[in-house]
Length: 432
Image (cartoon, rainbow, N blue to C red; front, side, top):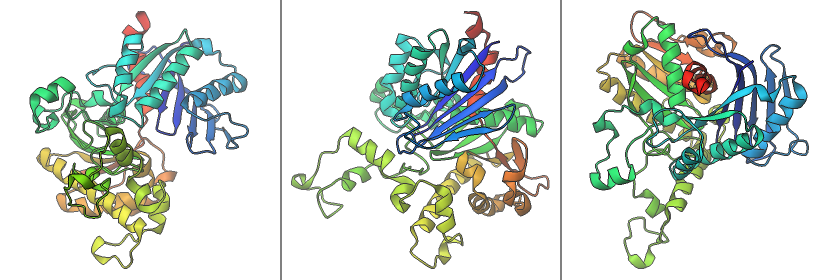
């Protein structure tokens, strides 16, 4: 039996899926079990272990029982549970697929070697919330499963063919090329999955698919896909730019951080004696970890924010409610990108696709976006479907009242499956 382990390290979470390779051409690998560990850095850690055959979950949340304090120990805990709770021989795991957010100039999956490990390590500053955790799990997996082949799959790879005028920043191009300063874009594994399953759902060739897809979770982005290729994406050099997230600021004026950290009470003061040196690490920490919904509301739970928010039109706010503000800020920023990408695609759009934890779970967010884009010819939202989405089966679900125009879809994205599928079908990983 040839098993594939797909590992997805978030900033404070770890999602793991185990698959059996199916040798039939174009056949997806078969899911054996899944596991998730959340709140790794903000205990108590939450652990789930679910067998695909029974769909029963084993859960533990007592940190006294769980020796988890970082991603490495989280991965070790999963392996311990695999050994004690299943009859699976870990020696049958032939490949370990690791989601790595930033690949720099790596545009295809790579086997982990000393060289590739250090290349990813050098890029950690460009994806501080994710590349570091991914590397720690890679190191743990090589130590625990030395006979398995570790392979890195990059979120940035999906956007490798961005048009040059889209990927280029208006800065000195000599410095930009020397230092690799350009738009890379992220959430690529999710967008690759979305493209594939939405094309199947619409009975279209992937090379003919035009969609505006959004992956809205604690990290959030929007992507324009034309003829099956990414032509623009809201994230840039790092995952920081674009939409606000749970702890990320999203797009801000580039000079904001200097005024934010200034010791002067006047934001516009340029008096050198009042200025404060702001280091890159400090600026990135503020904008990546001390901003977003948490800075506005005190919580990273968008569901809680929605419950407390006034969801009426922004012009009719009746109270100074931080949750209301956070909700409408996200809606506003999403609409900016959806509108721009609608024009970039010249209005020839097969569907708007909602994906990611927040977009898949928030009927309120989907409703707010749908009501706005209805003016561009997108299908009106079907409230009956939108409100009962959790009870509906399927990977892609039509939530719009389709009448021949542009569709409204929800896609239950699966980055682990996308990695495993690509690994399973790549003969070079199995013949070497």
